[in-house]
Image (tube, rainbow, N blue to C red; front, side):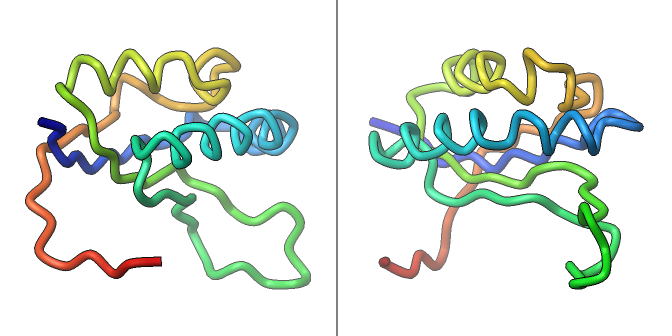
Length: 107
């Protein structure tokens, strides 16, 4: 049975341009994880709301929820993501928690 997890991974300092340059590849991976029922929610957290005059937004990291058999399996999946391999995510400060979801809004 799959377990729920919430993941918070900050970006390494100075990696906004790198994040933006590999974002298309990252989103392709996200789509694959979502279609397989592994990723249930995800997005970037920011310093400030996205404003039309800011380019790029002030990305700080990622917050995501997943269904996986184990925390180790989930971490292995995330370590293959381009945000990891390109050096965007700060794994020394990543947080991966078991998550007891109380509310889930269907699509």
